[in-house]
Image (cartoon, rainbow, N blue to C red):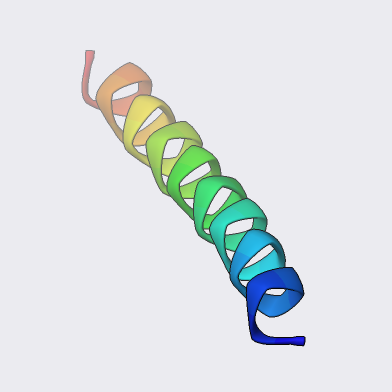
Length: 32
């Protein structure tokens, strides 16, 4: 069960990182 959860956590971590990146990009675009 732990191994399955680990894969899921890695997926969510990736999603969160992508969302953070999108927010950073939006911030950069508004600054220009």
